[in-house]
Image 1: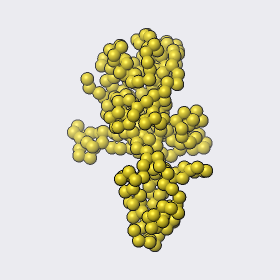
Image 2: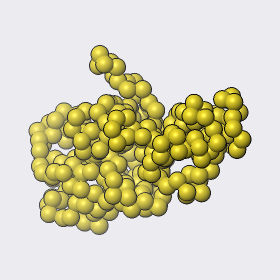
Image 3: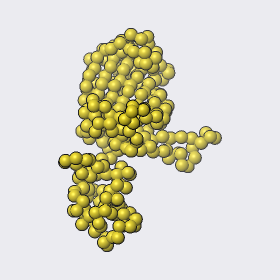
Image 4: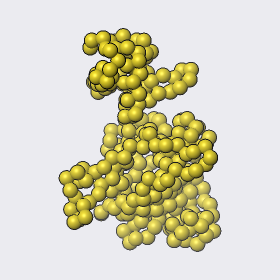
Length: 284
């Protein structure tokens, strides 16, 4: 690449050159790009042009910038794609995309159902529900914080079984209950001190909050959960159909929603509006 004049063409060329280094694996996910001086010399561009190129790549989510001592610009790690058209547990979702799935059980016990939980699970307020709180891991790093509740009467002795794997697989094997449909509401929320520490993110960074009620083949609800996903590691796939009931060519491929650059909640506490509600179906 020739020495640039700081124009738009040079910025695009630098951006493409960095993307090529990432796509070939020369710059691996999670790796620090190095100093501006080193990288600008390597690409044959000015530092001002390099900054513009890195800014464009950060907007795309290809790199992330970490401020402060020990910070810098790092190659972003691959995102987990979550398809809302099917009900799939996180372990299966990760395995399908080539990630190594893991879990850490933060807490588990029986609690009295509050009104939202009771309404979702079709039980009475105060009835016992089994609560399981876990950190879900992708390639050994925190991906989400999961708080799931199940009717205790329907799933007796659930806490006696290993809870580190797929709960859906456990419920199918031990109780004959399988997920068929889920209603999910999704919104962006800022990470509080606890969530930031657990998920290893900066305070206030956007998280993807998913409230889910899951139903069995008879339409009976059996799970009410609230999950917090790291927005910098999560991508949502939405499949829609045309008005005539057949998917048109664009929508048939699905629509990706990148949540890496959502606006944070305002300092005054104004909530971020919901992204979307969705219904996921699964046959068989």
